[in-house]
Length: 173
Image 1 (cartoon, rainbow, N blue to C red):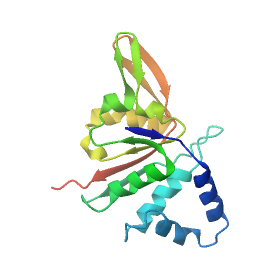
Image 2 (cartoon, rainbow, N blue to C red):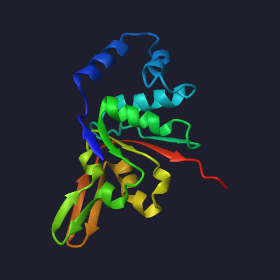
Image 3 (tube, one colour):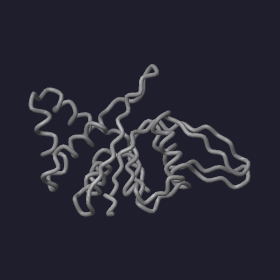
Image 4 (cartoon, rainbow, N blue to C red):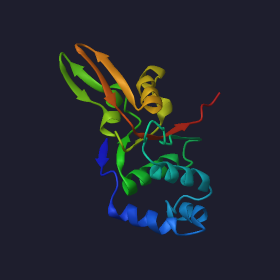
């Protein structure tokens, strides 16, 4: 995984320019990863999640996104470009429950990617490769903004108020 800053001056300037443009919804997909064509709604949706507000006053404002499609249609490229452009945490297809939630050894605890992405974004590539057990903590974080880690001699409730932007392949029957 890699971690970049949550927001930078370039992103702030881009958002200010968009905010004053009446044709904003038509222009975002063209500006956001122009190499990928014909999936403008997916690109717009990811961008809107990136700029969505954090939770405030008990309101859940975070927008989570799951891009589902056939292999090779551009899902991974969209989230990788978003990650490189706007920052956050990137979890590759090999990331498992331990990587997302953390790991313990005795009383020592190392937080996972969800905690590191608190108040920011996590991009998870090929979520369909994870087992339902691996996804459990992720779903708690998405719903509640926190998850409980309980293993070995460690029991902690960790903040994970993150926006989840993930990809998954269609399952062939």
